[in-house]
Image (cartoon, rainbow, N blue to C red):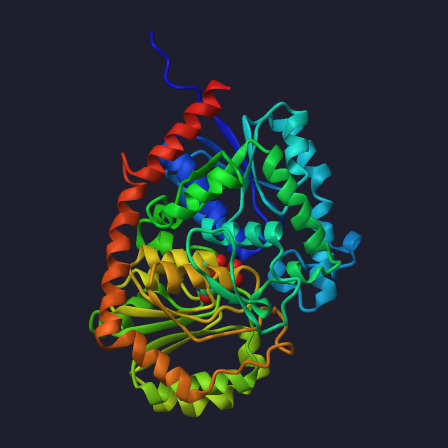
Length: 479
Ligand code: UDP
């Protein structure tokens, strides 16, 4: 009797931040649901509830996906108890200690590998030591980066050619040695390029080395989205890289989309009913990712700008923004925009919202997941990058794909205090109108819609990402 292909058991070990956990969980589900892999996700006690419901649903459908919980060494790393997610850090010191804590997860990982003996470890780029741990058990370690090829190519170019050394903060330069002419400033570069002596910088240096020693890299992108950059990456940076995205497309039904990442602060059907009242492409969705909290001064300008533009919108505000800025500031605003605007306080079911035909634009901070989700749903963007590699993702959207309008942000920083750049009401009004109506808007929208179709095909049977994943799994089985 012929036996089927060997079942692989793969461990997924995400960085403990929403922007990394969400795509890793999507990835594990994609491997398990569509490719028969037995998937185990490693997680900590307080992060588990963020996706326990999704796991429950999958298990009920007979999908082999499980969770192993490891204790997070908060106290050992000088963090308050309960701080287990990067989003809960509230000061540079906590941020730094958080990365120290990640380094202490090596031992628990080893113990789990010893016990379960999986065939492969997919570990986040923030765990550079995972390559060595995997090799102790004779298994390959794949890196999950969680951003675009484009962002890597820019990052590696700046490391290699060091064009920033001689520049003043706001002087512009062309990123050397990449396929397109991309103009940036030094002020738009992450802390890493300021020779910061912090844990994240140390980790980034180690992870660059581990790129070379690991089995390969998994990229949440698809070849057709950034072909010149996926080629450049394979040619000059890491030879073995598999594009397997957009992984968010594994969320097929309303429940899947509504439960993704966290418990939404709005009932999914209430949100959908509100969207149903709006014409196709008429609503602007505004959300700045899972972590960033704007100061009151900026929130007020956004509110005034939205009101002046007069377009329908959904605006997601963080709990901290509401607490810091007293409800009353928004009360008058909400009354005035009643019927036109829907405010979500806390966590929005973003995957569900972007998928709705009423959404015609997305004002985003350019976290890679948000950019990719926008592309996947054919939605053009107003790009307002804030920190990390978001300024690179912005350039991909505006200069390469040409499906976005930039607000011209300059300062790459997580700290609100460091941001002197405040976008005024008039600018917001202007960018909203530019994205939502007119010829330029139509052009961007039709380009985005074309990408949506290509993205969908990429993950279907025979599509590029689907074939890449099949080839990878075949290779892993043969090891
Ligand atoms: N997200 C969401 N609801 C929110 C805020 C964020 O579903 O209210 C999801 C979003 O869909 C994306 C992820 O959280 O998948 C955020 O990742 P991204 O890379 O865009 O930004 P980050 O939060 O890492 O800065």
